[in-house]
Length: 429
Ligand SMILES: NC(=O)c1ccc[n+]([C@@H]2O[C@H](COP(=O)([O-])OP(=O)(O)OC[C@H]3O[C@@H](n4cnc5c(N)ncnc54)[C@H](O)[C@@H]3O)[C@@H](O)[C@H]2O)c1
Image (cartoon, rainbow, N blue to C red):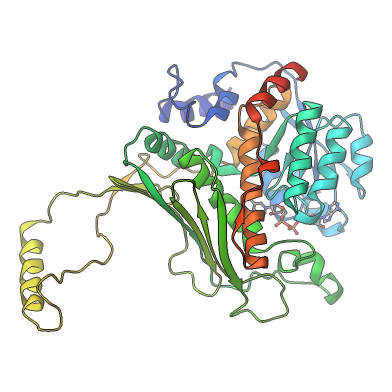
């Protein structure tokens, strides 16, 4: 009951109850609008890969009364031990194929390193399980396509770890963008900066690759698959279309410690009308942190900060205006500056909050709740699998462009005709 209330509260805060006004921008929220009181049915889950992310997901799942974590599977005992602290009654497996044979498992959460997502997801669908797969879903674009096709063929529920789809700040921001509040969007800047080596402590040297898999190309594509995947999805959600092509450059400029993935990346994604979305990341300076800046002709949105800013702000209070004018006069009279000189550094406008207060969750708990509802009701929410699919495809296409140092176009054969698929899905579910 408490859960139903908190969900109702969430939807009410977004102005969604009754009106369904947000569904056009975020159709997957139907997962909640249709839920009344689902029966006493439970979702019996297996978590494959209860490492750092797997256990984080479990920390929400164990609080959901509709969930029973019936199995844990990992090839590394310390991860099993951590998982058992959260779900002490779960059956333990070391081979995911045995989990899939377990008739008590309805659905699997895949939180292993990227290189083994695809085989586990394909096998899970083939054995009739519903799938929640962490991002990035596949190691290559071909793998992502195969996973998506398998979801369509089997009609099983498929969610990916794109939690921003359920983050109230992002949902509200997208509604405002789509309503034209910020004018025409002609640029999106996304960046994710950190200052650290991105390494985890390794208990003994032979475990280096197992623990720090993110740093090696055999397992991961580094910053593109680990970070860009989230931010690129925001761009296509905002513009409601896919970029046509991508170009960029990546290098290891700072952390020259034997890693194989870039520590410094810049990518430009170009849409059909020339609008650009950039992704940049360095892990040797965190001053600007992480953000997606969506730039419209009338205003700017920064959903991560939860703020928006209109271009035309009220004039500064009299005193500040006087100083500004005085400074401009002083500098205007200097020969090097010329008469038109005026500071063009960032606007100091403090902006407005998208929602009254900063939400307590980044969307992960609601994403998982929606997955559980979908498994119980057997209803795949509209467009959720497709958002995850395209987010993965975009970061993998970007990585390929960096590797080849070429401009690459989104391949036609990987574009989804998902309206047709949707119809097929309804028949099979
Ligand atoms: N959505 C998000 O914001 C978010 C955040 C962090 C990580 N992730 C994703 O979650 C996944 C896991 O990341 P992590 O940080 O938890 O990594 P991790 O290394 O902490 O955990 C991975 C676990 O998988 C286990 N494992 C490896 N191969 C396996 C196999 N064949 N069968 C069963 N278990 C196996 C490892 O032993 C480990 O316990 C990655 O895909 C990552 O991109 C998503």
